[in-house]
Image (cartoon, rainbow, N blue to C red; front, side):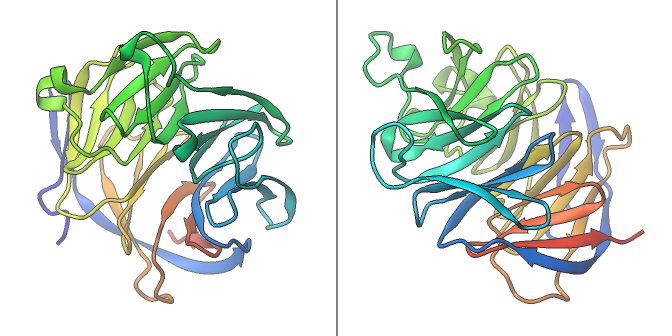
Length: 284
């Protein structure tokens, strides 16, 4: 089994995860994108998708109705140069605008609010470039995945720099090739790195790892559900469960698809490909 050696390490707790197979039933597909790159579901039940092919941010309802799109290529506000990640709260939407070295913030109706960039700062500790991801904790702190310096930068809800972590001084928790970031409801920061998932507490201390033999490409935490995937496999864990069981969701019986990202919500699996979102029902 691909993840037979996978273990979860949190603080001093060592738990070998039992891998079980979760069956699904295909329901429908929604959306039509040129080259989608990421998606997220807000607590209000709206989907937000970054389409790097069109340099756009798109909002949809869960039935697939497009509510609004914004963007276009450029470097002015409300424009993008390779939007690679999106995160949404109830009120706001955050986009990692990779080649513009910034994170842009919109309201839930995709009206531009502000952008955060640190390229011209005197303090090298807060400078970030080519951000690959962003996420907001339930305390309002913004975490940006800085691929240029291979670290995480933390700002408060007003955009003030707090700290960076995961860099060369992080020891066994040093990031080598970070790809994605997610924050759990208890404010643990999960960073997808080349060797698996590295977990930090809200103060930037490394506290755990999820090692995998598979080539994991995306991670999402939607409410209490942790989902991560390779190009053709999806893994799921309920963070509310005390047993740390991890399930592989079996989609092998369905059409071949290259999975960009995925998440589980309301007993459904959502899979993002470059062109659409496929929705599956989790079977008991």
